Length: 227
Image (cartoon, rainbow, N blue to C red; front, side, top):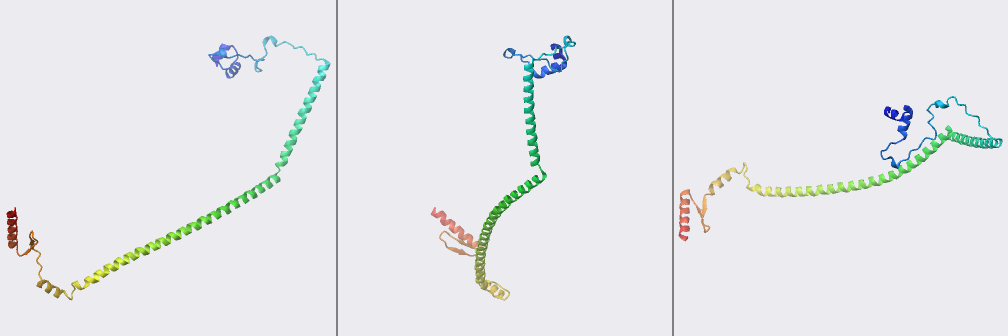
């Protein structure tokens, strides 16, 4: 700012005004500079005009009368506008009466309460319909689960009955403390030898290990002879 003041040769206040209201652009050929119509009001009186007494203007009578008429007309218009604004203000004051405001609040509350009651009624109807539908769905789901559980229990009971029936069929063949002696005697009488062999023709050979080895050797000789 000090550099601008030194370049322009003016006071800092004038430089600040110029700096804030005039944009300096390098491409100034498309711009037009405008001078002030009069110097700014914050500048002091020029030294050449400090002691100058301006002459009193001489106004003709006709012009003075016309100016007075225009001033009276202006004053009447301003007075009418002022009274009109005062009237509007008074009307607004009447509207801002506390009793009127309280009454408006009560009316607004009643209207809002009526709307709220209508909304609550509609929502209650929708809620009852939704709850009725949910109850029916829940009832159907419970009945389905009950039927499904019954079917599962029937299948389990059926399988249990079959297993019991099979167990009952095996009861006569079971060895108990009462028939254990008979079972031992039956086992001794009917000895089962699981040590046997089968040849290529399906013949079954039983006996001790030596005999079985001979059978195997004879079968092997038969195979070699056939080859």
